Image (tube, rainbow over all chains, first blue to last red; front, side, top):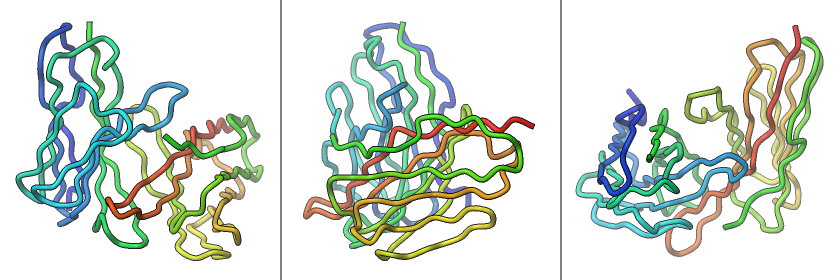
Length: 115
Length: 113
């Protein structure tokens, strides 16, 4: 299994541009999520999904869209990039979003710089 | 959002020394997780704890799920240079909307050869 994969690894955008960060997992996990990691702020949840066709907002959803058309993929879209969205983005997955107890596995991250 | 209180923030130790770090929360969790993150990489799961009082080992790493379900600690014995990195804890609980994970801000470990 490849686990959780993310592309691209690095990206530079200009303010106002849009882009999609890709995330895929091959573990048949129902639960997928997106976090951003900023110095001193820890990991903050952007959006999550407990299964195909179901998404919900996390702590910092503004400026981001998600969709979950398949179990395997959970892309994150930046609608109009802003410098405040410069960050490292991690995708993560768990077997179930509704289990009483669960672990979570992370992808390698996408490093985004917005100029 | 809720952040877990993780300490210490950073540690500088000699190779061969033991290391201890802990996380506390005001809320109870169903699961406690410990991760290591190397520079430029994603967090890697080290240990998962599922039961209050549980003590689990993974090689030189030992972690415990606190009895109150509000805390956890991670010990590393006989540290080696490749232990360098950022360690952080995570707590999991399940509201009706689906699993939620909360994270500590990390402990940066430097091992001096």
